[in-house]
Length: 311
Length: 254
Ligand SMILES: Nc1ncnc2c1ncn2[C@@H]1O[C@H](COP(=O)(O)OP(=O)(O)OP(=O)(O)O)[C@@H](O)[C@H]1O
Ligand SMILES: [Mg+2]
Image 1 (tube, rainbow over the protein chains, first blue to last red):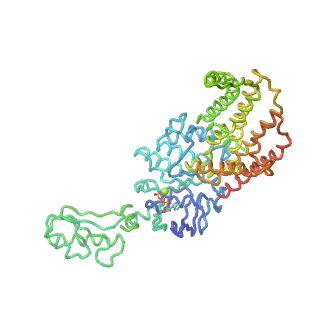
Image 2 (image 1 turned 60 degrees about the vertical axis):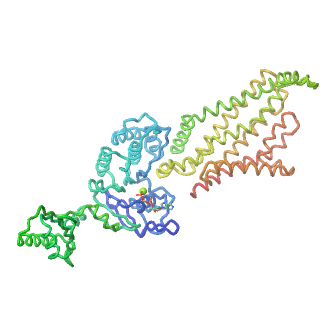
Image 3 (image 1 turned 180 degrees about the horizontal axis):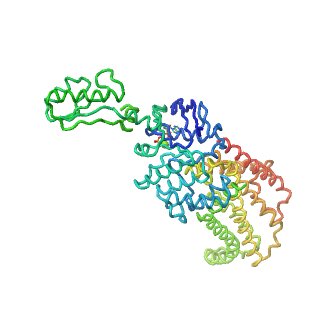
């Protein structure tokens, strides 16, 4: 079952079209990565899902119930971590979690147990200190604890790792990965390695449109066969090679890049890339060229990102 | 109900931990002490001045002070205390918008009217405690030094000003739902009080206006009758309730 579905969601701020006809759904127990540049509309999308902003058009359902702007009955299924979490500085983490628990109507004993459990999970040891003096990373941890407190069906995190050190980032990602068993996670980020580490499905948002979405496997199948690269020993060989294979480009020095669209109408297909490569190798052998290296190039998420963004 | 209580408790903890309550208690106590102190010191100051004035040829008649002098001071000073009180709570709602702390509460299902009501309750309770503390201290000293019996309708007159304070709290809450910054809220609240005052300059309208309650000290000397204030009391209470309702409605629309 899909925990979250969006269909034909659009949103403008005045003349500025921030989101255009957004459409995707998240099945249960998935970690869904939401990628996009600054200002791509990630936070805006999340706020619409939470009913904090009004969508101009479109329907959103959370756990089968439709989201209405300003109403918060669907929010009982959602745990939300804002991009810059703000808490009452005069409360301690335990007190803050208690307040959250009371508001969501949890039982007293349950609140106490769950608070301890969550603070343990996010590794926040200073639970008797007031939030006032917390660093951003500590606030982020408390943010995750409060978002998970009442066992939400859907956890929405807006850049959960942006304020964290490498160790903290890994810890938080591990947490998101483990809570997947009980909940569904939607999180936004700029950090592509995070996505590769834990996401089941990803979506690229660019100029308010979904440029690409799919499971990581689908992307992996794409990422192979971007092309290959040969490094020669002699300049003459480079020139000869470039002349014989018109689609290839010199990378400067002794390197030659053969992208997957080498030739004219090669497809983005592994088979063709492999064929191209063996073809090139035959040529190299036939002409007695010495090479330093030959290497298949993989499409990284970064390449994909750049491609989507158009750079 | 639990959500409301939890949020009210948070407001209460905030009041204590930010030191706001302590400051207000000290302040209102000082005001309470000041009233009889000023009354007590007046003759002495007059004497001092009389000495220096005598050299210039002026003579000052001895002044007689009693509880009335102290109560007059009370009604002269309490508006200042009221303004300070309002200044301290000017950002009670706007600070939460600006910091974004409320969003989390609202997304967790806290109804908006509970936010308004919790803040209103806490402010009213604080005002009540502070105000009657100030009153009580002045009353105690006056009883000790002089005789309170000389002033009539003491409690009634004091209650009038107390109600005025509650009205101002309701107005401020309403303004907090309309404006985004605390300075705008304070300016608007002050503006409304000023309108009430200016309209009150028309003699016919005066007795229907909340600010008329500030003149309730007239009851003490018997110069004004109690009946003269009933209208203003009811109008003030009515406007206060309306203000609170409007605040809830406006806030729900946001
Ligand atoms: N309240 C608002 N009024 C007007 N424009 C807004 C508002 N909120 C966001 N925008 C605009 O919408 C666009 C998308 O903003 P959004 O915050 O969703 O981006 P984002 O993808 O979360 O970016 P980041 O990666 O920096 O967090 C931006 O161009 C921003 O200027
Ligand atoms: Mg954002």
